[in-house]
Amino acid sequence: MSTAGLVPVMRLADAAGLSALAQQRMTVAGDKGAHAGAKITTLIAGMVAGADSIDDMDQLRHSGMNRLFDRIYAPSTLGSFLRAFTFGHVRQLDAVASRFLTNLATQSPNLVPADTGGYVFIDVDDTIIEVHGHTKQGAGFGYSGIRGLNALLATVTTKDSTPVIVAQRLRKGSCGSPRGAGRLIADAITTTRSLPSMTGKKMLMRADSAFYGRPSINAALTAGADVSVTMRMDPNVKRAIATIADNAWTAIRYTDALFDEDTQRWISSAEVAEVPFVAFASKKKADQVPGRLVVRRISELNNKDVDQPGLFDLHRFHAVFTTADPTLMDTVAADKTHRRHAIIEQVNADLKNSALAHMPSGKFTANAAWLVLAVMAFNLTRTAGVIAAGAMGRATTATIRRQVIAVPARIARRSRRVILHLPKGWKWETQWTRLFTHAHSPPVVVPA
Image (cartoon, rainbow, N blue to C red; front, side):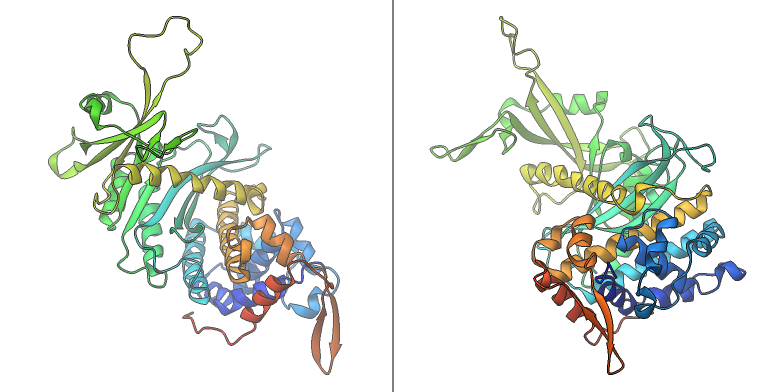
C-alpha cells in the first residue's frame, strides 16, 4: 500500500467517534443512505489520502487496502450518496463536524490549547471556489469576477496553536460576503465553547470590512465575543480620524522598521492611534455599539519621484473597529492582533490545494456536503500533525500527507496479526511512530 499513514489517522478518527456520530445523526433515506457512517468515513479517508474528486476515492481500493479497512465503497456509490443529500442533511453533517472536532480536541489537547493567556481568536472569511461547465447549481460571478461557488469559513486560533475550522457554509457564487454570516458566527462561537477547557474563555471575532454590519457584529456580541472588524473609509470614519491629535500617534514595528536603542522606540513609516467610536450611530439606541476605532496610518510614497515635495505629509489610513478590552489589548496590540486575521487566508489556500481543488458534483447540496467533509478531513489531518509534533504541528495538509500519510508499506500476516513492513530510514519515522502509538493506545472515552 502507498498510504500506510491512513492506519493511525483513521484509527484516530474512529476513536473520535466519526463513524458512530455519522451513523447516529444522518437520516438520508433509501438504499443510497444506508451505512451513512461507513460512507462518510470512506469519503474523509479518501480526502486525507489526497482525493479531490469522487473518482479519486478509487485509490482506497488498490493493493491490500481491503486487508486493513472494511466497508470501502466504490466512487459511484459515494457519488449517489452525496447526490441524495438535501439542505437538512447538510445541516446534519454540520452537526457531525462540530462534534467530531470537539472529540478530536479531547483526543489531542494541544490542538486548541486551553491556557491561551488572552483572547481566543475566531476568524471569519469567504473564498470563491472556481468551477467550470454550465451544470453546476448555484455557480455564478461574485465580487472576484470568477465563476464559482462561495465558501464561508470560520476558524479558531490561539497564540499557541494553528487554525482549525469550526464552522463552514457553501453559498451560491453571486452572493455577497456577509450573507448568512451572522448564523455562521453564532455556530462558530458555540462550537468553540464546546471544545475542552474553552468554556468561559474570552473570544475575539476578527473579520474584514465586508463583515462590518449589524447582523455579523450583533451575532458575535450576543454570543459573548468581542469583535475586531476592518472599517471602510466612509465619512463617519474620516471625521473620527480627523479628531486624532498629531502627538497621539505611536510608531510601530512594521515593514522596514528600525529599533532605536537610544530612545528605545521603533522608527517606522507606520503609526497607530485610537479614538472612541460608536458603530451604527445612525440607528436607534439599542442597535448602536460603542467601541474603539484603532487607526494605522502609513506615509504615502507614491509621489516620491516628484522634485518639489508637498507642503505636508500625506498618509493612507487603515481603520479597525473593536470592542476588545483595553486592559487586555492596547492600541498597538489591537492593530497587531487584527493584522493576524490574514492567517485564515492560509486555510483557504490549504483547502483549495487539497479536497477543495474541485467541486465534484453538479448538485449544489452534494457540493455543500463535500465542503463539510473537506473541513472534517482538514481538521483530522491537522490533529494528526499536532500529535506527530515537531514542525508538523504547523505544517500544511500537503506536508503532513507527504511526511506521515503517504508512507509506502508492505502488508504481511504473522500469527493471525497484520504486520506493516515500513521503509527503512524514513526521515519522519519518529513522528509516524508517535502518531501510530497515540492512535493505537487505549482511546480517551468521548461521547458519541
